[in-house]
Length: 314
Image (tube, rainbow, N blue to C red; front, side, top):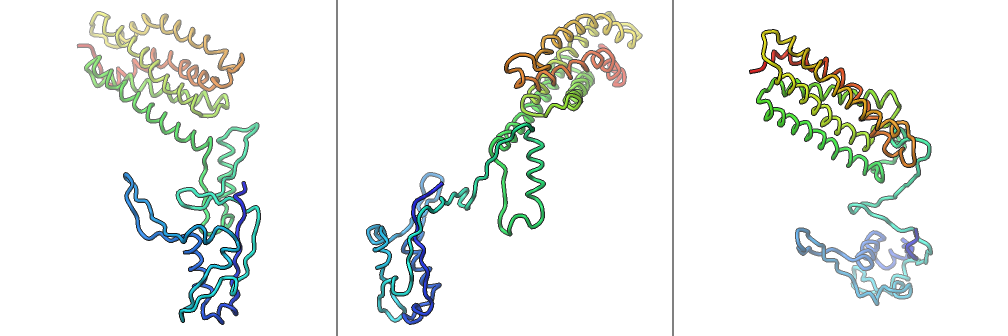
């Protein structure tokens, strides 16, 4: 990207010494004339904005004007810049881009045939090699990867909030810390099955699959509530284990039917059948993985949790 022409000013040390000045003082003076100097700051809303003092634009708008800029020597006499320096016009200067007041260069690329996670790991491995980047140079990854990381953080917060709200709901519904912990442990175990399903199918953990993980929290909790409610509705008897088994038998058919129907409905998406299904494929795989673990977890593991925590009906 071009940003117009530029001037290259080279100070001749011999000529500068004849005028009684040194190249460093000439550079500083020219910088103040051509770039201005921030002398103070004023407040604009919550920010402090610098006030830059420049010479009039008519004095520096052309090459001829720059050549005839008058500098003052330490003894007080004035002389033009062209007497001690050569000034050349350079065309097609690249634009200097800045981010947070720091010079930066944007390097872009296109990913084809690979997932973004493996590409980013490879890029980091190359850029982190010792001696590759000069001292004072650093890099930051942006673009789609940066947006994905921001979305991941948001979805993780949503997942944690969902778990917390489910726990509070269970406490309010059953007024028992033990049953709330038992159902929540079952839900988190089903959530772990989502990662196993993604690993088996070779599916990337992305925003869509994270949405499926969050949905599993609500789905498995709902089925756990169905089981716990059936257990509460059964007549009380001394054999708690028998009551837990009876509740599982009574709820096995509706839970199995609901789970199987949901899996069959999501199966075309999980297999990538149909136009545009690839975008929702990780979501379907995540939900199916959690649902496949839901049936044994609710009917077998949840009763064990309730028994271990010595939960009994009032």
